[in-house]
Each structure stands twice: as C-alpha cells, then as structure tokens.
Length: 563
Image 1: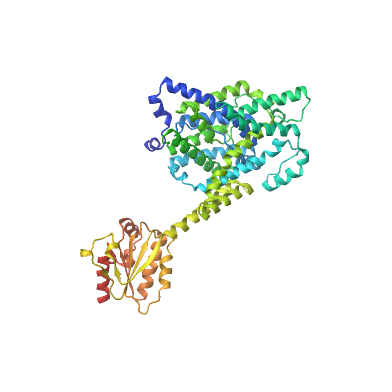
Image 2: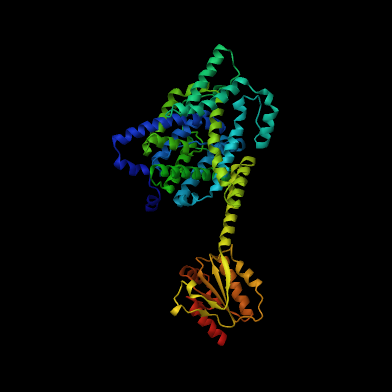
C-alpha cells in the first residue's frame, strides 16, 4: 500500500489545500472556454476515427474528468486526440467496435502498469526524431483521410492504403461537389482568420456555427441538398450510455496486444509531452508516473461507456493555461460543460456539414505536422534525419505500430553505434606522463617507465557490447618482434562493463595464458570491480593481478617479467 502511495500522488490533493474563491473563478472561466473549444474537436475526432460523434464527446467527458481528478499535472486536459485517429480507425476496420473496446481496456491496464513500474521518466526519453516522424506522418495521414469530405467527392468507398487513396481521389476528381468544397475551404479560412479578430472564441467553433447556418440557408432558400451533414451519415443520440463490459477471450486478447501497446505508448508519449510543455509555461513539475496511472484509469473507464482512447491534449491544455486555469478544477469544469452541451444541445449536431468538420481536421493536421521541427532536424546528424524519415514514411505507408517499433529499433542501433564510438582503446609506449594522470600522484612529477617485455593498453569509455571488439581489433593491428610477457590493461576511465566486455576480457586472458602472457588490470573502479567479482573474473586473471592504479600494476608486471 505504501508503494502505491509513493507512486500515485494526484495533483488535486495538493492543490485543494491552498484553494480559494479567486482561484476557483479563474479555473471556472478557463474550464468553460476549454469545454467550448473541446466540443468541435471531440466531434471531429470521433467521426474521423470511424465512430459516431457522441462517442467523441463521451470520451472527452469521462476521460477528461478522470485525468483531471487523478492526474499528475495541475493543468492537463484529457480527451480524444488526432494522434489516435489512424490507429482507432484501423482497429475498427479489422476487429470492429468490440475489438476497439478491448484494445482500449488493455491499453488502460498497460498505462497503469507503466506508472506502477515507474516508467514515466523513461518514456520521456524516446528520441525526438521518432516523435516528430510519427507525429508528422499522422498529420499527413489525417489530411489524406479528409479529402473526400472536404471536396464532397462522390465515392462509394475510400481505400485504406495511403497510395491507393490518392489514386482513387484523382480518379474521382470530376465528381467534386462545388457547394461542399466551398463549405470546406471556407471553414479553413474562417478558422485561420478568427484569431486575428477574436482571441477567446475558438476558430473551429466559429466555423462550425457559421457553416452550419450557411448550409441550412442554402438548403432552405437555394434548394442545395448536396451538402452532406452529420445527420445524413449518423443517427445522433444525447442519452448517456449504460456502462457495459465486453466479453474477454484469450484469443481476442492475444490478437489485440500489439494495437493495445501502440495505444498505450502513444497515449503515454503524448500525455507526458503535453504535461512537460505545460510545466514550462506555469513553472510547475508534473508527476509522470501518477499521470500515466490516471491515463490508464481514464482508458479503462472510457470504453465501458462507449468511448474511445484518450490522452492529454496539448492544444486544449495550452488553451486552459492561456485562459487562467491553474488547477485540476478547470479540467473538471471542462468535462461538466461538455456534459451539459451533450445532454441539451447534441441533437443540433446533426446539421453540421461534414465538409466543415473536414476543414477543422485539415487545420488540426497542419498543427500536428510540425514542419518547422522537421526543417530544424534536417540540420542535425544524418542518423537523426534517417530515423525521422524512416518513421515518417512507415507511418503513412504502413501504420503507426510498425513505425514506432522499427523507429525505436533504428534509434537504439544508432545509439549503440554512437556509444561504441565514444569508447577508445590506445597503446601507451615507453613511458607514462605524470601530467596526464588523475588516479594517483607521482613524486616530483616523475615519469613511469614501462619495463621491457610489458605492454600497456588503455580503455577510455564504457566497455560494453558495442565496443567489446575494439580491444581485439587494436591488438590485431600490432605486429611484435618480441612477444611481451605482461599486458597491462588500464581501466581507470571505464565507467561500466557489461557481460560482453567481461566475456572479451576473459577470452583475452585465456588466449594470453596459452601464449605465456599474463594480463594485469589497472585502475579498476569500484563499480567495475563489483561487476567483475559477480562474474568471478578474478578466477581467470588472478586476484593479485587486479591493481588499484598504474604504479602498482607496473611493479607487479616487473615482478612477473623478472621471475
């Protein structure tokens, strides 16, 4: 129980200790504004994900409330986000709504496990090029999925493959509905220009109100009935669904492990990224493990009420901060505002044009594209650029699961390569300069002479599997007229050694023994010494041949040579 208390510390508990009416009024105003901002996004994300619009709002209500109550950030606003659209749509196409429900429940369990295992700080260290790559890829994919509705193309079905989508769009280019295209493009323009005149009201809400009224007027007075609305595609309900648990089977769970892990990883990354951005603005520090547990609880609750996966939303979180929100109360108010709108105004959503929602998502995809970050990364090392573009193209051509998995593998391989490059093995000839020594002090700055029949090698950097073969490579390049009797290996600059490094050292000792050469280790740090003892390395080299610093190692070598 104490362990859970140490990991799970919701911010609301600390915040309410010093709460007052002034803070409440500020949070109330911010919550109302964020609730209004979240409405069109929740509807748009729900429809784009392949579910009915009310499921997007239910997700924002249930998950938004839970994330604010149990979360590790003061200002995080949770709900459905654009990043989930592609993965949700894919799961529904392959496994149906029941499959999505089970995958979301599993993702919630994974997120809670991440938090309890204190993986919050580790997840934040996922390489930046991978995050930019798959975020930009998602943005392009979202934009691609909206072309049909944005232009009102007359298509029976849209292919799931990225390339096939664009081929199908070009084949149907002659079927563009002029009025739908006008509504869609006008929505984009309204969203872009609204902030120039009004800061408090979101452009997406203005676009939805204006374009819905415009579509109704065109239908009523001009007889235009080709503009498709939400009501033409979905039946709208404002009744709160009853909680229901899906039937779980072992076969179904096995099939959905991979997409569930993708949802969990994506939710963890996005929520912690959002919380970190918020910290920088308000000068606070979120609890990453508590945040993951809250995200997990939210994703357990959301599907039970018919919702979809949720996470922390950067845009809504920033809207909350910019309008004065400074505690989880603002997030709770945002959920209550959405609940009131859902109960009393939801039937009006049937008149919203699909082209207008497509326009909203086009702007969302532009914001997600992060093209400035992409351009900035192009000036980074080539390895970062490779990871960026591989992740990007895998996201749009295959799917997010493949992109994250392969992107992480490539990033890990490149990291290992870089780490290996930091480790050096050098040969010291004739004498050792006192000016370069730090592990011991020589009297009168004297130089240590390397005796005849002794070779000294120095390993600089971690001696792990990425650098384990370097020592052998250096030795292979040396051609000796006389075989040495002793090889001293200086390890004062080796911070750690792994099993591969120990294996290589063991092989070196055994090969040297066959050649009549004794290995002596010098300057072994406490940490490395402990690792060698656990591996029983002293049985191979001899305990007396592991020396604390070079002058003792040289004396030991001289004794062996003279013996």
